[in-house]
Length: 261
Image (cartoon, rainbow, N blue to C red; front, top):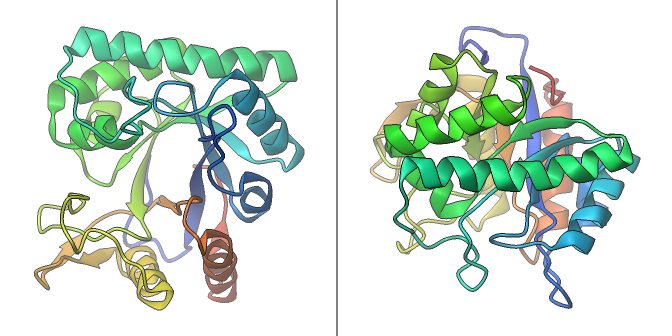
């Protein structure tokens, strides 16, 4: 399902979390980010987003011929879905089916197709190490999309393992602006060194992950990983400039940009 690290014909998907405005509150610059990426993860109303925002974002993605995915998270608008919430696997299954179904409604109405599902925030991070939650999410994606949608998960995580076990398509995701621990997990946002703010350092990490199949942990240890899709966040002050720079850098190095497996 994912790229083999020995494969020299390098290809990568550039994904971005979009549609995260809510009512009069605006986040990101979706219209300008969309032409620079290959797949969009659209918020489904629980951690961010609302019907009008979802409608507008799907329309923009279709206009730009960008692969569209659902970005389900915990029902936590105030915490932007980044706070851990204790839920049973059954509850998580329903949470994902509900939100993916909402996006599928817009796609059906507008003539689009669901390409992938990528959990958001705390749900994503909890699933990365919790096999039971990962299995619930993978089953939800498999059931609601009849096994056709790709499951995006942290590279090498329990979420990827759950998708592989169900024989649904998966993409190992890596992050351009987050630091890593020795076990391959992301550094908690509560830590001072969780985010990479230097664009040059961020691009260097992306190239290392794609071209070498490794990432350097905060301890200095080299950690192996697979990179099928790179997340670039669209809500930072310099997000647009960074998206342009990383896209140009990858193309200059002969790396194909594609949302296809």
